Length: 460
Ligand code: UD1
Ligand code: MG
Image (tube, rainbow, N blue to C red):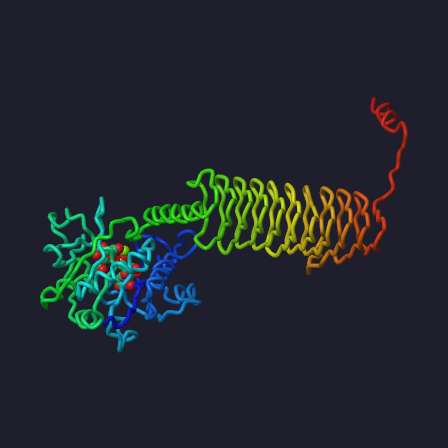
Protein backbone atom coordinates (compact mmCIF):
# COMPACT_ATOMS: atom_id res chain seq x y z
CA UNK A 1 0.00 0.00 0.00
CA UNK A 2 1.25 3.41 -1.01
CA UNK A 3 1.94 5.51 2.09
CA UNK A 4 1.82 8.92 0.53
CA UNK A 5 4.07 11.10 -1.53
CA UNK A 6 6.14 14.03 -0.32
CA UNK A 7 8.67 16.09 -2.26
CA UNK A 8 11.78 18.05 -1.48
CA UNK A 9 13.20 20.56 -3.93
CA UNK A 10 16.83 21.56 -3.52
CA UNK A 11 17.40 25.25 -4.17
CA UNK A 12 20.04 26.38 -1.70
CA UNK A 13 23.03 26.50 -4.02
CA UNK A 14 24.62 29.75 -5.06
CA UNK A 15 24.68 28.95 -8.72
CA UNK A 16 28.30 30.09 -8.99
CA UNK A 17 28.46 29.33 -12.70
CA UNK A 18 25.62 31.77 -13.44
CA UNK A 19 27.96 34.62 -12.40
CA UNK A 20 24.96 36.55 -11.14
CA UNK A 21 23.80 38.60 -8.17
CA UNK A 22 20.38 36.97 -8.61
CA UNK A 23 19.99 33.49 -7.06
CA UNK A 24 20.05 30.87 -9.81
CA UNK A 25 16.54 29.55 -9.15
CA UNK A 26 15.09 33.06 -9.60
CA UNK A 27 16.43 33.50 -13.12
CA UNK A 28 13.33 33.67 -15.31
CA UNK A 29 12.41 31.20 -18.01
CA UNK A 30 9.48 32.31 -20.19
CA UNK A 31 8.59 34.88 -17.56
CA UNK A 32 8.58 32.70 -14.45
CA UNK A 33 11.41 32.07 -12.01
CA UNK A 34 13.13 28.75 -12.72
CA UNK A 35 12.01 27.24 -9.40
CA UNK A 36 8.34 27.74 -10.34
CA UNK A 37 8.54 24.86 -12.81
CA UNK A 38 9.66 22.01 -10.50
CA UNK A 39 7.16 23.33 -7.93
CA UNK A 40 4.37 23.08 -10.50
CA UNK A 41 5.50 19.68 -11.77
CA UNK A 42 5.56 18.25 -8.21
CA UNK A 43 2.08 19.56 -7.51
CA UNK A 44 0.72 18.25 -10.80
CA UNK A 45 2.24 14.86 -9.99
CA UNK A 46 0.07 14.73 -6.88
CA UNK A 47 2.49 15.89 -4.18
CA UNK A 48 0.70 17.47 -1.24
CA UNK A 49 3.61 17.89 1.18
CA UNK A 50 6.27 20.03 -0.43
CA UNK A 51 9.50 21.24 1.18
CA UNK A 52 11.97 23.59 -0.48
CA UNK A 53 15.54 23.83 0.79
CA UNK A 54 16.90 27.35 0.44
CA UNK A 55 20.19 28.86 1.54
CA UNK A 56 21.93 31.35 -0.68
CA UNK A 57 19.76 34.53 -0.51
CA UNK A 58 17.06 32.47 1.20
CA UNK A 59 14.83 35.46 2.00
CA UNK A 60 14.80 36.68 -1.60
CA UNK A 61 13.85 33.23 -2.86
CA UNK A 62 11.11 32.80 -0.24
CA UNK A 63 9.65 36.21 -1.03
CA UNK A 64 9.41 35.37 -4.72
CA UNK A 65 7.19 32.40 -3.79
CA UNK A 66 5.29 33.93 -0.89
CA UNK A 67 1.95 32.71 -2.28
CA UNK A 68 3.00 29.05 -2.57
CA UNK A 69 1.86 26.39 -0.11
CA UNK A 70 5.28 24.97 0.76
CA UNK A 71 7.48 24.46 3.84
CA UNK A 72 10.77 26.31 3.65
CA UNK A 73 13.90 24.85 5.20
CA UNK A 74 17.17 26.70 5.46
CA UNK A 75 20.56 25.21 4.71
CA UNK A 76 22.81 27.93 6.07
CA UNK A 77 26.01 26.45 4.67
CA UNK A 78 25.96 24.75 1.30
CA UNK A 79 27.79 21.55 2.14
CA UNK A 80 26.39 19.54 -0.76
CA UNK A 81 23.17 17.98 -2.06
CA UNK A 82 23.21 15.22 0.61
CA UNK A 83 23.50 17.77 3.39
CA UNK A 84 20.72 19.82 1.76
CA UNK A 85 18.26 16.92 1.96
CA UNK A 86 19.35 16.23 5.54
CA UNK A 87 18.31 19.79 6.40
CA UNK A 88 14.78 18.87 5.30
CA UNK A 89 14.65 15.83 7.60
CA UNK A 90 12.88 17.70 10.38
CA UNK A 91 10.14 18.95 8.10
CA UNK A 92 9.62 15.30 7.01
CA UNK A 93 9.48 13.93 10.57
CA UNK A 94 6.83 11.22 10.81
CA UNK A 95 6.63 10.78 7.03
CA UNK A 96 7.53 7.33 5.79
CA UNK A 97 6.15 7.06 2.26
CA UNK A 98 7.82 7.83 -1.05
CA UNK A 99 10.00 10.89 -1.22
CA UNK A 100 10.40 12.65 -4.55
CA UNK A 101 13.56 14.72 -4.77
CA UNK A 102 13.83 17.44 -7.39
CA UNK A 103 16.46 20.04 -8.10
CA UNK A 104 15.42 23.66 -8.43
CA UNK A 105 17.62 23.97 -11.50
CA UNK A 106 15.88 21.30 -13.63
CA UNK A 107 12.98 23.36 -14.97
CA UNK A 108 11.85 21.49 -18.09
CA UNK A 109 10.77 18.32 -16.32
CA UNK A 110 7.05 17.58 -16.84
CA UNK A 111 4.68 16.00 -14.34
CA UNK A 112 3.77 12.98 -16.51
CA UNK A 113 7.40 11.80 -16.34
CA UNK A 114 7.24 12.02 -12.55
CA UNK A 115 3.99 10.03 -12.45
CA UNK A 116 5.38 7.27 -14.68
CA UNK A 117 8.61 7.08 -12.68
CA UNK A 118 6.66 6.90 -9.43
CA UNK A 119 4.69 3.90 -10.74
CA UNK A 120 7.88 2.15 -11.80
CA UNK A 121 9.56 2.87 -8.44
CA UNK A 122 6.64 1.48 -6.48
CA UNK A 123 6.26 -1.52 -8.77
CA UNK A 124 9.96 -2.38 -8.41
CA UNK A 125 9.88 -1.84 -4.63
CA UNK A 126 13.26 -0.10 -4.89
CA UNK A 127 14.62 2.11 -2.10
CA UNK A 128 16.12 4.46 -4.68
CA UNK A 129 15.03 5.09 -8.25
CA UNK A 130 17.17 7.59 -10.13
CA UNK A 131 15.73 9.36 -13.15
CA UNK A 132 18.46 9.16 -15.76
CA UNK A 133 18.99 10.26 -19.33
CA UNK A 134 21.25 9.44 -22.23
CA UNK A 135 23.08 12.68 -22.99
CA UNK A 136 25.00 13.24 -26.20
CA UNK A 137 27.34 15.40 -24.18
CA UNK A 138 27.31 14.13 -20.58
CA UNK A 139 29.98 16.61 -19.43
CA UNK A 140 29.33 18.01 -15.97
CA UNK A 141 26.73 15.45 -14.91
CA UNK A 142 27.06 12.52 -12.50
CA UNK A 143 27.41 9.19 -14.37
CA UNK A 144 25.28 6.12 -13.73
CA UNK A 145 27.28 2.96 -13.04
CA UNK A 146 25.02 -0.07 -13.45
CA UNK A 147 24.84 -3.78 -13.27
CA UNK A 148 21.80 -4.29 -15.50
CA UNK A 149 18.75 -3.03 -13.62
CA UNK A 150 20.64 -2.37 -10.41
CA UNK A 151 22.33 1.04 -10.23
CA UNK A 152 25.60 0.43 -8.36
CA UNK A 153 26.65 4.01 -7.84
CA UNK A 154 26.66 7.52 -9.23
CA UNK A 155 30.04 9.06 -9.94
CA UNK A 156 30.42 12.83 -10.24
CA UNK A 157 32.33 14.13 -13.25
CA UNK A 158 35.06 15.50 -11.02
CA UNK A 159 35.56 12.13 -9.30
CA UNK A 160 35.17 9.93 -12.37
CA UNK A 161 37.83 7.84 -14.06
CA UNK A 162 38.33 8.33 -17.81
CA UNK A 163 36.36 5.17 -18.40
CA UNK A 164 33.46 6.35 -16.23
CA UNK A 165 33.45 9.70 -18.05
CA UNK A 166 32.66 7.82 -21.24
CA UNK A 167 29.34 6.66 -19.74
CA UNK A 168 26.59 8.65 -21.43
CA UNK A 169 23.80 7.75 -18.98
CA UNK A 170 23.64 10.58 -16.50
CA UNK A 171 21.99 11.43 -13.20
CA UNK A 172 19.28 14.02 -13.79
CA UNK A 173 19.27 14.97 -10.10
CA UNK A 174 15.70 13.67 -9.73
CA UNK A 175 15.02 10.67 -7.50
CA UNK A 176 12.33 8.64 -5.80
CA UNK A 177 13.34 7.38 -2.39
CA UNK A 178 11.95 5.25 0.34
CA UNK A 179 11.85 8.09 2.87
CA UNK A 180 12.88 5.97 5.88
CA UNK A 181 15.84 4.52 4.02
CA UNK A 182 17.22 7.75 2.59
CA UNK A 183 16.86 9.79 5.77
CA UNK A 184 18.85 7.24 7.73
CA UNK A 185 21.44 6.69 4.95
CA UNK A 186 22.11 10.44 4.74
CA UNK A 187 23.44 10.44 8.29
CA UNK A 188 26.36 8.22 7.23
CA UNK A 189 27.49 10.28 4.21
CA UNK A 190 31.20 11.17 4.03
CA UNK A 191 32.89 14.05 2.26
CA UNK A 192 35.81 12.06 0.84
CA UNK A 193 35.36 13.35 -2.73
CA UNK A 194 37.02 15.97 -4.90
CA UNK A 195 34.58 18.71 -3.87
CA UNK A 196 34.64 17.87 -0.15
CA UNK A 197 30.82 17.83 -0.15
CA UNK A 198 28.11 15.56 1.18
CA UNK A 199 26.88 14.02 -2.07
CA UNK A 200 23.27 12.87 -2.12
CA UNK A 201 24.29 10.57 -4.96
CA UNK A 202 26.30 8.44 -2.48
CA UNK A 203 23.09 6.99 -1.00
CA UNK A 204 22.89 4.77 -4.07
CA UNK A 205 26.11 2.91 -3.23
CA UNK A 206 24.98 2.82 0.41
CA UNK A 207 21.75 1.10 -0.61
CA UNK A 208 23.66 -1.45 -2.67
CA UNK A 209 25.96 -2.21 0.30
CA UNK A 210 22.89 -2.70 2.46
CA UNK A 211 21.56 -5.23 -0.06
CA UNK A 212 18.65 -3.06 -1.20
CA UNK A 213 17.15 -2.61 -4.65
CA UNK A 214 18.22 0.48 -6.61
CA UNK A 215 16.84 1.34 -10.01
CA UNK A 216 17.48 3.82 -12.77
CA UNK A 217 14.72 4.82 -15.15
CA UNK A 218 15.91 6.28 -18.45
CA UNK A 219 13.81 9.27 -19.48
CA UNK A 220 13.72 9.20 -23.29
CA UNK A 221 13.34 12.95 -23.70
CA UNK A 222 16.73 14.02 -22.39
CA UNK A 223 16.09 17.73 -22.99
CA UNK A 224 13.40 17.67 -20.28
CA UNK A 225 16.03 16.57 -17.82
CA UNK A 226 18.49 19.33 -18.55
CA UNK A 227 20.07 20.99 -15.51
CA UNK A 228 20.79 24.72 -15.65
CA UNK A 229 24.18 25.73 -14.36
CA UNK A 230 25.18 28.62 -16.62
CA UNK A 231 23.50 31.22 -18.79
CA UNK A 232 24.11 29.32 -21.98
CA UNK A 233 22.06 26.44 -20.61
CA UNK A 234 19.51 28.98 -19.36
CA UNK A 235 19.05 30.27 -22.91
CA UNK A 236 18.82 26.69 -24.24
CA UNK A 237 16.15 25.84 -21.68
CA UNK A 238 14.27 29.02 -22.51
CA UNK A 239 14.27 28.07 -26.20
CA UNK A 240 12.87 24.62 -25.38
CA UNK A 241 10.23 26.09 -23.07
CA UNK A 242 9.32 28.76 -25.63
CA UNK A 243 8.77 26.11 -28.26
CA UNK A 244 6.62 24.16 -25.80
CA UNK A 245 4.52 27.25 -24.97
CA UNK A 246 4.16 28.20 -28.64
CA UNK A 247 3.28 24.64 -29.67
CA UNK A 248 0.49 24.46 -27.11
CA UNK A 249 -0.88 27.79 -28.33
CA UNK A 250 -0.73 26.79 -31.98
CA UNK A 251 -2.48 23.49 -31.19
CA UNK A 252 -5.20 25.49 -29.44
CA UNK A 253 -5.85 27.60 -32.54
CA UNK A 254 -3.41 30.51 -32.39
CA UNK A 255 -1.54 31.33 -35.61
CA UNK A 256 2.10 32.34 -35.60
CA UNK A 257 3.71 33.44 -38.82
CA UNK A 258 7.16 32.61 -37.45
CA UNK A 259 6.94 30.85 -34.07
CA UNK A 260 10.71 30.98 -33.61
CA UNK A 261 10.46 34.73 -33.03
CA UNK A 262 7.34 34.84 -30.85
CA UNK A 263 8.04 35.26 -27.13
CA UNK A 264 5.11 34.32 -24.93
CA UNK A 265 5.43 33.82 -21.18
CA UNK A 266 4.10 30.55 -19.83
CA UNK A 267 1.55 32.58 -17.82
CA UNK A 268 -0.13 34.13 -20.88
CA UNK A 269 -3.45 33.07 -22.45
CA UNK A 270 -4.28 33.64 -26.12
CA UNK A 271 -7.62 32.95 -27.80
CA UNK A 272 -8.25 31.02 -31.00
CA UNK A 273 -7.83 32.61 -34.44
CA UNK A 274 -5.54 35.26 -33.07
CA UNK A 275 -2.57 35.85 -35.35
CA UNK A 276 0.82 36.67 -33.87
CA UNK A 277 3.26 38.25 -36.30
CA UNK A 278 7.06 37.90 -35.92
CA UNK A 279 8.84 39.54 -32.99
CA UNK A 280 5.90 39.81 -30.65
CA UNK A 281 6.35 39.63 -26.88
CA UNK A 282 3.44 38.77 -24.58
CA UNK A 283 4.48 38.87 -20.95
CA UNK A 284 3.33 38.32 -17.37
CA UNK A 285 -0.36 38.12 -16.50
CA UNK A 286 -1.50 38.91 -20.04
CA UNK A 287 -4.70 37.61 -21.62
CA UNK A 288 -5.37 38.02 -25.31
CA UNK A 289 -8.82 37.30 -26.74
CA UNK A 290 -9.71 35.52 -29.95
CA UNK A 291 -9.58 36.94 -33.48
CA UNK A 292 -6.92 39.49 -32.62
CA UNK A 293 -4.08 40.54 -34.89
CA UNK A 294 -0.84 41.38 -33.17
CA UNK A 295 1.74 42.87 -35.47
CA UNK A 296 5.51 42.98 -35.41
CA UNK A 297 7.29 44.59 -32.51
CA UNK A 298 4.30 44.68 -30.16
CA UNK A 299 5.09 44.18 -26.46
CA UNK A 300 2.18 43.47 -24.10
CA UNK A 301 2.84 43.22 -20.35
CA UNK A 302 0.27 42.33 -17.64
CA UNK A 303 -2.68 43.45 -19.78
CA UNK A 304 -5.95 42.07 -20.99
CA UNK A 305 -6.85 42.43 -24.62
CA UNK A 306 -10.42 41.52 -25.64
CA UNK A 307 -11.60 39.78 -28.82
CA UNK A 308 -11.05 41.24 -32.28
CA UNK A 309 -8.41 43.76 -31.27
CA UNK A 310 -5.80 44.90 -33.76
CA UNK A 311 -2.48 45.84 -32.17
CA UNK A 312 -0.38 47.47 -34.86
CA UNK A 313 3.38 47.42 -35.28
CA UNK A 314 5.65 48.71 -32.56
CA UNK A 315 3.08 49.35 -29.84
CA UNK A 316 3.88 48.89 -26.14
CA UNK A 317 1.05 48.07 -23.72
CA UNK A 318 1.41 47.73 -19.98
CA UNK A 319 -1.14 47.02 -17.20
CA UNK A 320 -4.06 48.08 -19.38
CA UNK A 321 -7.43 46.69 -20.42
CA UNK A 322 -8.26 46.98 -24.08
CA UNK A 323 -11.90 46.24 -24.95
CA UNK A 324 -13.27 44.43 -28.03
CA UNK A 325 -12.52 45.59 -31.58
CA UNK A 326 -10.06 48.32 -30.61
CA UNK A 327 -7.32 49.42 -32.99
CA UNK A 328 -4.08 50.40 -31.31
CA UNK A 329 -0.98 51.81 -32.99
CA UNK A 330 1.23 51.66 -34.90
CA UNK A 331 3.71 52.99 -32.32
CA UNK A 332 1.21 53.62 -29.53
CA UNK A 333 2.23 53.58 -25.88
CA UNK A 334 -0.29 52.45 -23.29
CA UNK A 335 1.14 52.96 -19.81
CA UNK A 336 -0.48 51.45 -16.71
CA UNK A 337 -4.11 52.00 -15.75
CA UNK A 338 -5.95 52.39 -19.05
CA UNK A 339 -9.40 50.91 -19.52
CA UNK A 340 -10.73 51.13 -23.08
CA UNK A 341 -14.37 50.00 -23.41
CA UNK A 342 -14.26 48.89 -27.03
CA UNK A 343 -14.16 50.06 -30.67
CA UNK A 344 -11.57 52.64 -29.64
CA UNK A 345 -8.94 53.86 -32.02
CA UNK A 346 -5.55 54.90 -30.68
CA UNK A 347 -3.24 55.90 -33.50
CA UNK A 348 0.44 56.56 -34.01
CA UNK A 349 2.47 58.33 -31.34
CA UNK A 350 -0.37 58.41 -28.87
CA UNK A 351 0.49 57.87 -25.21
CA UNK A 352 -2.21 57.06 -22.67
CA UNK A 353 -2.00 56.58 -18.90
CA UNK A 354 -4.86 56.02 -16.42
CA UNK A 355 -7.31 56.83 -19.18
CA UNK A 356 -10.85 55.49 -19.33
CA UNK A 357 -12.37 55.58 -22.79
CA UNK A 358 -16.06 55.02 -23.49
CA UNK A 359 -17.03 52.99 -26.53
CA UNK A 360 -15.98 54.36 -29.89
CA UNK A 361 -13.76 57.20 -28.63
CA UNK A 362 -10.66 57.96 -30.66
CA UNK A 363 -7.28 59.64 -30.53
CA UNK A 364 -5.77 58.96 -33.89
CA UNK A 365 -2.50 60.89 -33.85
CA UNK A 366 0.22 62.49 -31.69
CA UNK A 367 -1.65 62.80 -28.42
CA UNK A 368 -1.12 62.47 -24.67
CA UNK A 369 -4.05 61.39 -22.49
CA UNK A 370 -3.19 61.12 -18.78
CA UNK A 371 -5.62 60.79 -15.83
CA UNK A 372 -8.51 61.16 -18.22
CA UNK A 373 -12.14 60.02 -18.07
CA UNK A 374 -13.72 60.04 -21.48
CA UNK A 375 -17.27 59.17 -22.49
CA UNK A 376 -18.49 57.58 -25.71
CA UNK A 377 -17.76 58.71 -29.28
CA UNK A 378 -15.30 61.42 -28.35
CA UNK A 379 -12.84 62.42 -31.02
CA UNK A 380 -9.48 63.88 -30.01
CA UNK A 381 -7.78 65.77 -32.83
CA UNK A 382 -4.12 65.46 -33.66
CA UNK A 383 -1.85 66.82 -30.98
CA UNK A 384 -4.25 66.87 -28.03
CA UNK A 385 -2.47 67.10 -24.68
CA UNK A 386 -3.96 66.66 -21.23
CA UNK A 387 -1.78 68.81 -18.96
CA UNK A 388 -2.37 66.60 -15.93
CA UNK A 389 0.58 67.61 -13.76
CA UNK A 390 1.04 71.01 -12.15
CA UNK A 391 4.49 70.18 -10.80
CA UNK A 392 3.08 68.95 -7.49
CA UNK A 393 0.00 66.81 -8.09
CA UNK A 394 -1.85 65.06 -10.87
CA UNK A 395 -5.31 66.25 -11.96
CA UNK A 396 -8.10 64.79 -14.03
CA UNK A 397 -9.53 65.76 -17.38
CA UNK A 398 -13.14 64.64 -17.76
CA UNK A 399 -14.71 64.64 -21.22
CA UNK A 400 -18.36 63.63 -21.66
CA UNK A 401 -19.93 61.75 -24.59
CA UNK A 402 -19.86 63.02 -28.21
CA UNK A 403 -17.31 65.79 -27.67
CA UNK A 404 -15.22 66.81 -30.67
CA UNK A 405 -11.75 68.12 -29.86
CA UNK A 406 -9.97 70.00 -32.63
CA UNK A 407 -6.27 69.59 -33.31
CA UNK A 408 -3.55 70.95 -31.03
CA UNK A 409 -5.67 71.41 -27.91
CA UNK A 410 -4.34 71.47 -24.36
CA UNK A 411 -6.57 70.68 -21.40
CA UNK A 412 -5.21 72.29 -18.23
CA UNK A 413 -6.50 69.82 -15.62
CA UNK A 414 -8.60 69.68 -13.55
CA UNK A 415 -11.15 70.47 -16.20
CA UNK A 416 -14.51 69.03 -17.31
CA UNK A 417 -16.01 69.20 -20.80
CA UNK A 418 -19.78 68.75 -21.10
CA UNK A 419 -21.50 66.44 -23.53
CA UNK A 420 -21.69 67.24 -27.25
CA UNK A 421 -19.35 70.25 -27.03
CA UNK A 422 -16.80 71.28 -29.61
CA UNK A 423 -13.33 72.53 -28.72
CA UNK A 424 -11.75 74.73 -31.38
CA UNK A 425 -8.35 73.76 -32.75
CA UNK A 426 -5.36 75.34 -31.02
CA UNK A 427 -7.24 76.02 -27.79
CA UNK A 428 -5.75 75.96 -24.32
CA UNK A 429 -8.74 74.99 -22.18
CA UNK A 430 -8.43 76.18 -18.59
CA UNK A 431 -12.10 76.34 -17.56
CA UNK A 432 -14.97 73.83 -17.59
CA UNK A 433 -17.10 73.83 -20.73
CA UNK A 434 -20.86 73.18 -20.39
CA UNK A 435 -22.71 70.73 -22.65
CA UNK A 436 -23.57 71.58 -26.27
CA UNK A 437 -21.09 74.53 -26.39
CA UNK A 438 -18.30 75.72 -28.60
CA UNK A 439 -15.11 76.66 -26.72
CA UNK A 440 -12.25 78.47 -28.42
CA UNK A 441 -9.30 79.75 -26.43
CA UNK A 442 -6.74 81.23 -28.79
CA UNK A 443 -5.72 84.76 -29.67
CA UNK A 444 -7.42 86.24 -32.69
CA UNK A 445 -5.49 86.23 -35.95
CA UNK A 446 -3.98 89.52 -37.13
CA UNK A 447 -3.19 90.09 -40.82
CA UNK A 448 -0.89 92.98 -41.81
CA UNK A 449 -1.01 93.21 -45.57
CA UNK A 450 2.20 94.01 -47.49
CA UNK A 451 4.34 93.47 -44.38
CA UNK A 452 6.97 91.16 -45.91
CA UNK A 453 7.43 93.36 -48.98
CA UNK A 454 8.17 96.36 -46.75
CA UNK A 455 10.56 94.26 -44.60
CA UNK A 456 12.52 93.09 -47.65
CA UNK A 457 12.85 96.59 -49.12
CA UNK A 458 14.31 97.82 -45.77
CA UNK A 459 16.96 95.08 -45.86
CA UNK A 460 18.22 95.78 -49.43
C1 UD1 B 1 24.03 17.38 -9.31
C2 UD1 B 1 24.35 15.89 -9.06
C3 UD1 B 1 24.77 15.27 -10.38
C4 UD1 B 1 23.67 15.46 -11.41
C5 UD1 B 1 23.27 16.93 -11.56
C6 UD1 B 1 22.02 17.05 -12.41
C7 UD1 B 1 25.24 15.63 -6.78
C8 UD1 B 1 26.44 15.44 -5.96
N1 UD1 B 1 25.42 15.76 -8.11
O1 UD1 B 1 25.24 18.01 -9.75
O2 UD1 B 1 25.01 13.87 -10.20
O3 UD1 B 1 24.09 14.94 -12.66
O4 UD1 B 1 22.98 17.50 -10.27
O5 UD1 B 1 21.72 18.38 -12.72
O6 UD1 B 1 24.15 15.65 -6.26
N2 UD1 B 1 22.08 22.41 -3.70
C9 UD1 B 1 21.69 22.72 -2.43
N3 UD1 B 1 22.61 22.72 -1.43
C10 UD1 B 1 23.90 22.39 -1.65
C11 UD1 B 1 24.30 22.06 -2.96
C12 UD1 B 1 23.36 22.09 -3.97
O7 UD1 B 1 20.52 23.01 -2.17
O8 UD1 B 1 24.68 22.39 -0.67
C13 UD1 B 1 21.06 22.43 -4.77
C14 UD1 B 1 21.34 23.46 -5.84
O9 UD1 B 1 20.72 24.68 -5.53
C15 UD1 B 1 20.74 22.82 -7.09
C16 UD1 B 1 20.84 21.34 -6.80
O10 UD1 B 1 21.06 21.19 -5.41
O11 UD1 B 1 19.38 23.14 -7.26
C17 UD1 B 1 21.99 20.68 -7.57
O12 UD1 B 1 23.21 21.32 -7.19
P1 UD1 B 1 24.35 21.64 -8.23
O13 UD1 B 1 25.45 22.30 -7.51
O14 UD1 B 1 23.78 22.30 -9.41
O15 UD1 B 1 24.82 20.14 -8.56
P2 UD1 B 1 25.41 19.63 -9.93
O16 UD1 B 1 26.86 19.89 -9.94
O17 UD1 B 1 24.60 20.12 -11.05
MG1 MG C 1 23.14 21.58 -11.26
